[in-house]
Picture (cartoon, one colour):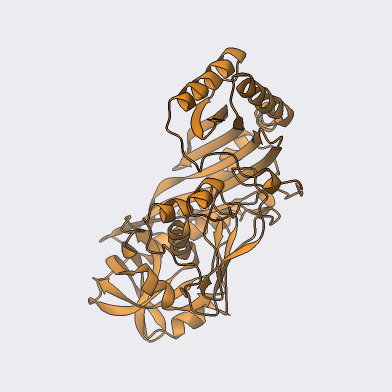
Length: 449
């Protein structure tokens, strides 16, 4: 059990990190900086992978580091290091100061406004250490892989099964006097296998993840689902090129919302590098659909009481009943746009797509001919123009039934048209990531076989 005890104890250093941040801010002030901000972190983790019944890899990680940004008027300098010894701290602060003295002024540089700093730090229930050992993690991974290999005789090989646990502490402070921290955990079980029928071979995988081990699916269920998916892909056929409805399963539909957030991000907007520039108030989704951020969700994968600038997070709608209600802004991008930060420096926190839901089976029954997409391939998304073109795999739907698997297809469209043609939301949300949505049905995309 010593490995488990050390793993848990490795991030019990919140007070040490806070002292480090406080000391670095003091040094920055003594070096003449008008303002400064510091982020410090410590991570510890264990990862175990097995393949074909044998232990393949064991990885321990333990990382600590900090980054500092200083401001001399409107000039900015940043530096970082993984070494927190006094000499390294002094050298890193000096490096940031030297950079700031020789950079150009930017009127938008500076800390977020002091009155926006978080003052309340609710218990978000993020920290659930798992005192597993290498042997126990190996046994769990072997269980997942055995369930996959024994699920169907057509499972012919394994990509391996993995078990991982991570614990982290993040501390942020700035010269407004703000000092805040987050401590959290993330655990996972994953499995990937290869299936064959003598003519073709297909691979697929499945995983479960959560803040607590109580949030994870059973290892046997993870392996069985990986095998079921791989076997279901055997016998893939081509389809005739045309325009058809496309139903994205929940786990890939989250990517569509990710593209939306990227297009609404301040960095893209102030550079005029988004197809949604100057779009506040524009109708984008059908009226019944909203995209809500809930950063204070207990055990949420993206929960945080403050953003990367120390600004207090709050619930908001980015899309409200179909209309664009908010951009995704940190303090710098907000100033560039002449707006106010939305407490999203560093990204979004716990997005949820909301609207009238239908069972996935009902959405499928409503499709005469179309594609159920279970995998997206490639990176053919252009946020500047909105053009969308991805390789996909999944299942051909005919007369309301999935009839055979398909792969090596390409779907294409324009993101604005796709969002506007969203005609169905499944009641099957995938809650494993920071973006939670059910399956999404788009009424008409070009499909090339």
